[in-house]
Image (tube, rainbow, N blue to C red; front, side):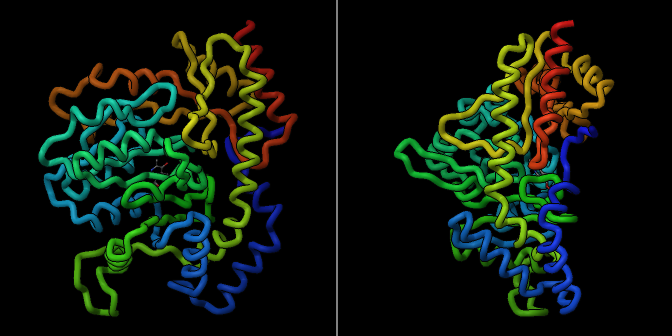
Length: 375
Ligand SMILES: *Cc1c(COP(=O)(O)O)cnc(C)c1O
């Protein structure tokens, strides 16, 4: 029995024939760049998300950058981001000479603490970038109210939550990434909808904004060699689009499989004292990109090492909050500035979670976690 964090090979094996023929079709036509599969996949994903436009691009980081460029943000503009997230979210803000403004997180949901956003808003604030971390939406109802009140753009980093559904207080439902002005996602192989290399996309409702984002991803041109705005080169390969178009059909099955694994962890680990299981929000479904527990009493690293010795991998997403990363330190924002994120960085542990998990594998993981706390 070999336990892994993800099992991309097992997932491929189950759809091998379909994937191979989709790849062969691209090879036979040699339309490697902007082949018809790119448009087809974008249309299918737009239908899945019930959104007007899906604009494919090269990766999830580019998607964030293109989003901020499309909104026309100017150097010095401030963008609010959660401090407990993957670096890409803040990186693109800094790259564009915008100012990342960090906000602490809520411990049970792991996402941005919406009650701490307004105190960070200044006349230069232009946008908020919530991150739907680990596969569950941030508190978007409250966040959208704040954004509306202060006339701010909202860009949802949906790299970990594609397929999640958010329900507003009036019962209205929307897919993650389709609530704010722009949603961005990543098709990195281990993401919930992963390709076999790099890939990403933007979700946009507004026609003009979508046109701008599309142009930016394509050297700022609509007509070849007519560059109306400054853009970049960020394309989704035809091969990747062909693979993704096959895998999109299975996304809901994959989400269900992940939820089954999560339900089992929930049930079998509920009695373990010393860990806190991930909370299920009542306004968002969870697609369990990660099943992340919190380990109390400073025993996280000890548990991680113990599991490793038993042949069980686990991961820390993320070990250092952004304000304590060298590249993002700021005067007056040392240790203690964002206590919840700092605590999370010392407590979080993501357990193996993937679509191919066998019951006996999970049984073994659960047994060893019990064994650790019963020693
Ligand atoms: C993976 C990820 C990204 C970046 O995606 P890439 O495709 O690797 O560039 C951005 N934000 C979050 C939260 C992610 O998990």
